[in-house]
Amino acid sequence: MSTGAWIVIAAALAVVLVALVVGLTLYRRRQVSLKAPETPQLDSAETKDRSGGYKAQSGFSFSQGTAAPPAPAPRPAPKPAPKPAVKPEPAPRTVPLPEEITEAPPSAPAPAEPKAEPAPAPKAEPKPEPKAEPKPEPKVEPKPEPEPAEPKPAEPEPVEPEVAPEPERPAPEPVEPEVEPAPATETVAEPEVTEPEVVEPEIVEPAGPAAVPPAAPIEEIEPTAGRLVRLRGRLARSQSAVGKSLLGLLGGGDLDEDSWEEIEDTLLVADLGAATTTKIVDRLREEMVVNNVRSEADARAVLRSVLVDELRPELDRSIRALPHEDHPAVLLVVGVNGTGKTTTTGKLARVLVADGRRVLLGAADTFRAAAADQLQTWAERVGAEVVRGKEAADPAAVAFDAVARGIDNGVDAVLVDTAGRLHTKTGLMDELGKVKRVVEKKAAVDEVLLVLDATIGQNGLMQARVFAEVVDITGVVLTKLDGTAKGGIVFQVQHELGVPVKLVGLGEGADDLAPFEPEAFVDALLG
Image (tube, rainbow, N blue to C red; front, side, top):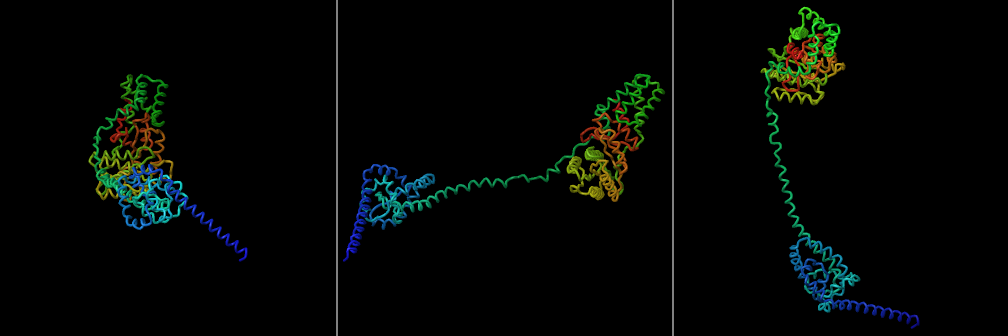
């Protein structure tokens, strides 16, 4: 053989020797790892004292690596053993189990002791307990057989570093499914929380809303007779300044021109107007001379007579609300915004109901959303019917429907509340004329009441003139007369329009609407 061949053979032998040496070295190291832990037997005893902990931690590798190769064959049979072992664990319940499971992963690297189960197993049996400390060593050997996973429950505690690593990984897996059923049973208690949901359908709110609206009792209505007398005190508080000033001047006997000028100023401030004031002053001059007035009592009598005559008591101030043979009386209530039309309509309905009349209210004010609701409230308080349309509906159509309903139901009077409109808005004023024309196709309009705010003074007269041109005003309602010292508008309206003041509002109460009586008004004016 050539030298090269011998060299190759020598190299091969050297490699074989090196391999044998390495193998023997590794094998000895394994034996050393098994013998080294013999000293810490006390530690294993301590772990035995915590056997309950081990049972809960069934994934520990130290208890799994047990006897010689025959052991794995019989151990597949004890597989059911670990299951009952886990069942007692639910006694401590899920709380300890999850904690131990978390501890298992850190221990997993420690028990990496699989490999070569058969050979070293018998040697390890007498020395199973000391394996608690070799945790750092097994980290190097994580490739053993998966079979040792089953021998976890085996009581022989001889822990072999060879079996540990792989059983640990499968170990937590069987334990986890067993731990999951335990919390599953605990979660069964959670459906108890759903029990309060049953209370929700027990709500009785929809019990009887329908019964509430009809339950509204009809208010007791004061008699209509003598209302202005009862309300005289309110009117006197606002008007007494005018009366006292006039009486103080007239009761002084002979008056010079300065005194008469002061009387004129007082009447003008009270909103009687220039023409009415001039007429009253001329009458007073004559009466003072004819009656030889020298005292305040005489001056009062003369002043009262002149003012009453100027209010034209002969005018018909009755409300045309009596029904006809084939249809009810129809009354339109008109005016600018904020004068109190809807409130006046409701108060007038109370007056008619108090006199035994059947009343129907038509909510033709479709521009203000609260108007229909306000009128509905008034109707419920007095027991009247209401016809209302949709918001922004044609007011003429609503008024027509109200009159038609009144005819069908045989009511005595139909009161139609129209939308407020400024007298300067030509389009809105034309719409008001349309409302009246449409209603007259069904029944004649008996009364058109113009509602004026007594506190606005001369502006009220301009409003009255425009409304009189669009619709034929048959009567005036003065509201808020208790809150102003300018009650002289009564004289001016009647003088300019020739239309009587039929009603006056003297407060916010439901019964604070009174018929206008010239004598009572003048008495309240003079105080």
